[in-house]
Length: 162
Image 1 (cartoon, one colour):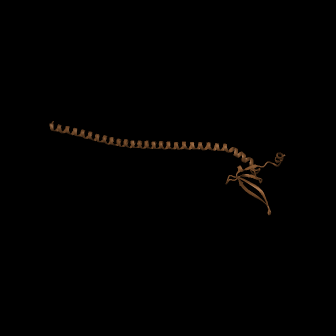
Image 2 (spheres, rainbow, N blue to C red):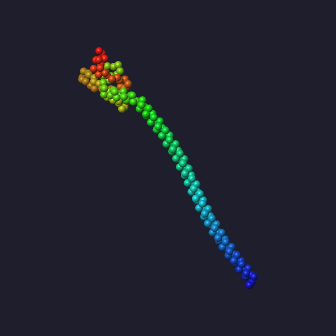
Image 3 (cartoon, one colour):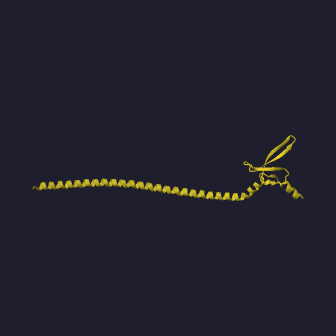
């Protein structure tokens, strides 16, 4: 065996082994780069998801605050309505006593019939007969309900005058 041939053969084996080692190293490096890219893509996705979650949490907190404010305002409004209803319960009772009855302006002589509250002005709508040279007409007048009083029936007026 020739020493040159052995050396050549050893060099071939070494070169072949080194070539395979470099190929394997290059393949591992490519796999490593692909894994790094995938990891980077996943990290970006996770960061985007985290940002979206934080945005949703902020939005939910703002909405919860707005809902709480609206509920508080509704409670205040409801309490105001309840208070107004309680205050106006007596007024409603007084109005109910006037409607459909014979009334007059407090201290006045003209008798009228109270028909109900006007939707436009909130005043009591009253009607009375007015006689003139040309005949009788029905007069429609709106007066503040507070200015009206019930006219006592004729039987009560006679007994109080006696």
